[in-house]
Image (cartoon, rainbow, N blue to C red; front, top):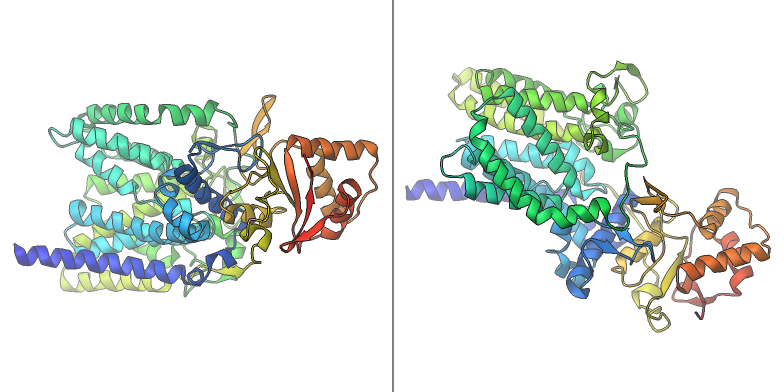
Length: 567
């Protein structure tokens, strides 16, 4: 017994170490100074920097976890209606406080990938398979599959799936006699935690479990009392947060894009991921376009074959057939409303396109359904690898040779990053603090926004949201309360429109008295204490000329130019 226990602990240590080393490898370009590096998706990267900074403000400044006015001042942002990741940002707040949000995002990606793989390893090795190697393969794929690694390029919430295996564990345990209250209550707590990590993952899990229940009738009535207990606990814990999400200040309805804009093309299923030793950036672009973040499949031909083999090996198992059914349905849902071979070549309508009109499901970006299929594939690979122990020697050798040939070409390359400009000394040395009064904001020019205000959003976030600033990159209502349709751009104002017009045309228009008053009205609305013109951005000279005509000559200070409004 002692020898067996020691052997199991060594297996645990080996699995955890391998996952940690792989995660270290993936983020290796960030270990030196993450505040000077940026991912391919700069907009989402800036947003999650801000969310980690918000967690620090909740812990160290007593701010509301669900709402902030440090961005989009004075209207604020409903953080329950955005992916704020409070269950991560709050526990990691001490790291943010000491090292800054850039280090916290690195820790999130590192721990998210390795933690998800480890959590699946634990579930598989303790409850689903006997073979430690089989459990290791399942954890490896469920944590480091191409879709999850791709999302690490700016959307770390999709690397953080470490709560999901424990939810699955508690659902499985509901079938055991006497587990109704204990497992049901724990299930409710875990569901509540997952809401504060990634609500979209929770919805995908709910759909997957519902499909498994359809495909595998496993005396599911035994689970109903425990599910009811779990639902009750979750409702108690989530009643106010969800009320605030859907009805509180800054709530919105719908999303400002087509959810199947990046639907899974058929050609992406068996292609190698672009950031792997066998991958090709050119082929990936031909298949899905340039959005790395939506590369949700890219299993490679070997894994596709091994998943099919795994289903065949496990076909006599009703549970495995149910998993395969759920995975297939979710994969088809990821196709969107029409089948595509590549992003530009259409084959016809997709069979489950109608699901995009189902409430709640219509909020899920369609390629994310492929992530759920990917996780199910990891479980099937583990179950089949466990079954392979009992194959004849030739069959066992063929299975493991196939698995090795499938996995080796998929080995991921480090996450690509690029150098970015340093934060000006005006912010790192907090030169704004002596002149900014309570209730005033720092107006960054360009204003924080998607694409056009990336540097401003990043500066505000790396400053740990220490000062209120108007605008930002987030989801909120277009023009509340008249129009609560979701948008990325916030309520339109004259100054924002003017700066955007100058950026597009390169022309600094002559402003009359009405335009001067409109800019002053915006500064009054934003309670501007200082207006800060950032260096090194497109059409800066023209924007400076216009602002100078209204506010006078700025003062150079700490690598920026500053207007003091004297409000």
